[in-house]
Image (cartoon, helix red, strand yellow):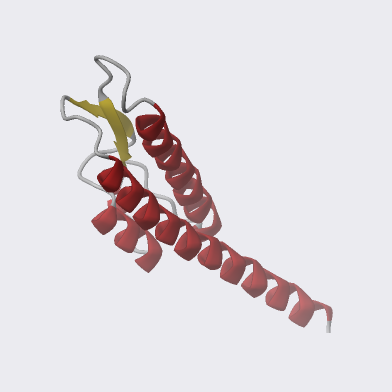
Length: 116
């Protein structure tokens, strides 16, 4: 497990992981009629679960039980499930992007106060 003390770095990692999950979910939809295709997903709760940041805690609760790995399952791809998971992933991305924006705003404020 990687524990980041840098909130910007951990948020960047969260954004990267969310993007990778979106790719896996998209791939599932694209291959749902492919014979012998195994559904893939990415979960990363252990990666994020050890941090004290509320964003990482929320992401860890939503995104499954194991570190960053592509998990495959024998279940058939259900388009409704994949679209639902994509919606959840999109919400997580929005939260992470807002967190990054907040961190950048905080940095700008500190820089501007130091220049005054």
